[in-house]
Length: 302
Ligand code: NAP
Image (cartoon, rainbow, N blue to C red; front, side, top):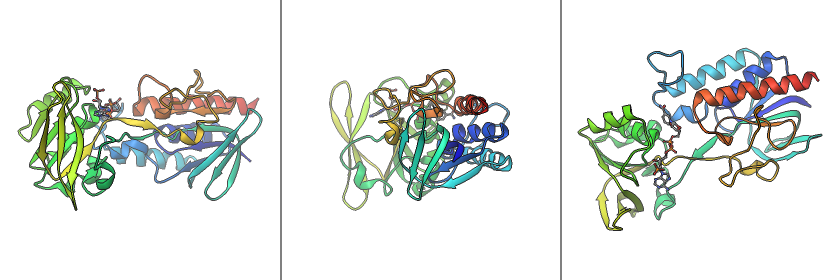
């Protein structure tokens, strides 16, 4: 039996790992793909303290992983397929085994929200992308659209200007959710054309993406934009499905916690983007991880 099992290797899970191993707990972190979480899709993180010139997301994720492993955290690459949580017993089923833990820290984060429009599924990975950092280079001299009005959408649009010859920025309202600094940079770009009060209602194409149908959210008027690719940046949704029957979640699927990050089950914690919180940033995810692991270690000591 493990003392602490952490599920998910983003900033929240890795920070929990750092605090857990430094607290002397026998700790295992389960990660499905590769550590780093959502930040590995970010070109530049400018608001994480300690990096006056910013740091690229992959670099920050790698550094956190390296630090955690150097301190003694074991990372196992496996997918959690089910869990059974009671105050007395915690079982984690993966594709390879069943692990029992005294304490569990859930840090599975969130995944990109879909537009849920016709053509989206068909062209996902070949014309529709959820990661500008990963795929922008495929769109050299192309015409693309970014859907969304948050920090991610505006950051993606700016990143795409390094490759594409035209970037439509399609947002459903007339005001962006993104910060002022990003909005100013968008306004100064000759390559980005904002299309406000509008949403993508269909992605067009037979073998490849050839355009999108955009609907005006005020007038319902529709028009077609000819383009080569669509970058979807309309927020994220919690990856809590596997835990939803075991711990209390909000209607949106975020896991509810107390001040120690403890869920409705004693000894089970939730940290980072998966948690019902007011701010989802690297810094808050890391802080959640530290709080949960510190409490878990204290509880293990009795
Ligand atoms: P977000 O802030 O939730 O923004 C999502 C955007 O998508 C909103 O503009 C929203 O429109 C729009 N949207 C949502 N559902 C939609 C739908 N079905 N159809 C069309 N549009 C839809 O998500 P985010 O931009 O990914 O940012 C997530 C968090 O990460 C934020 O806290 C953000 O500050 C942070 N972040 C920080 C950085 C950075 O600091 N470098 C970079 C990226 C992200 P409405 O505005 O109308 O709701």
